[in-house]
Length: 351
Image (cartoon, rainbow, N blue to C red; front, side, top):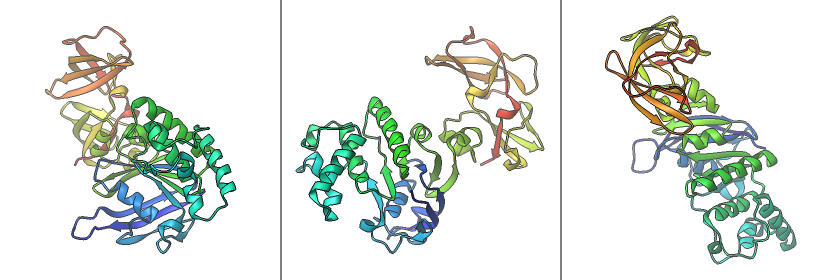
């Protein structure tokens, strides 16, 4: 297990003035599974490649267990990267692909053969060592690429969009496999994704990156309960935003005053703010309570596991609420009341 720290990491590519990665600081404890999350072009893969040693940073440092790895070339750094497109050698058998790293290190062939068997069993692909990559499905090729990386016993395993080329069913299988391997081996894993659901399902911690700048680094549930900004909230599916002014534990808006009292509320700013609450946390048709407002259902969308309601409020703005399954008999055009539980409201600075 390896403790990885990125210290004020910067990367500016030649011929550009905008940093691809800017003042990145990340502390990744040993044995953690961390996601680098953000939209395309935000600097995620650049960060991963700098950790691997494939790209040299413009400034800053990368340490493994407290020692800088910048002077160490990629092939001796112990950070192995599994690429999005697998990059298996088509002229080699599966076994030769998996054992390639050990062969380059001069490991005896008998030992390589045994380790190949162990790795293919680990990724749940026994008895395919003699096949060629072209004979495998996309999911099987991804597993072979994972086995090839793990056979060298890396200090850090780096995964670049590991599930993006797989269909939904295979993505579920690979998620389970990655989690199982990570727990079994305890290796520090860092993976890149633009899919927030994937990050939430796999990661212990998520590093949210926009335009090369780290926005928030926290466990998955914090991004839902306590997003650092409206943009972060929107990236995690937030749709409800109401402008207001905070004074103490009260936010004054055009719809009335709302009292909020969540954990961590002291980090919220005073003055001009944006109030946000997730659709599933809004209570429809509550008993008489504070933090309640009136509206009318504009649209009702049955999704299966839940029903989504788009509700027009008295000031003409719109808010979204959900209910599990098809609970109740609310229909389009119905007047409703909504309540915002005090501990579910979150407040961020206005952008």
